[in-house]
Length: 97
Image (tube, rainbow, N blue to C red):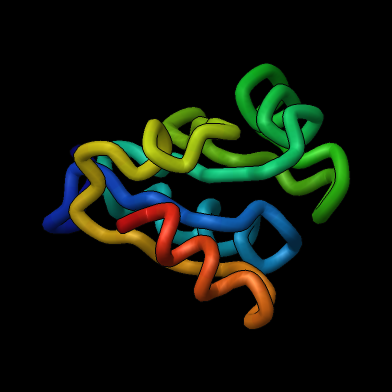
């Protein structure tokens, strides 16, 4: 595990801000799981440790993975960070519940 208190953090949203948050959190936890609705983004993060749509050139740490299934991304997370447009917060929160 990293230097922090949590084993896993889930970042819900894989835009520019979500990608940056995942990279900033990663050194402090054991695992960061990112939820993205786009399979292209999921594959890019899992295969190349980079988001092919946002923050191109920004390499994510090895402990960052992604999933297009929100339940899988959030499973066993000690904290969930919502980084989605405000118009989607209600629906995403309901999906998480």
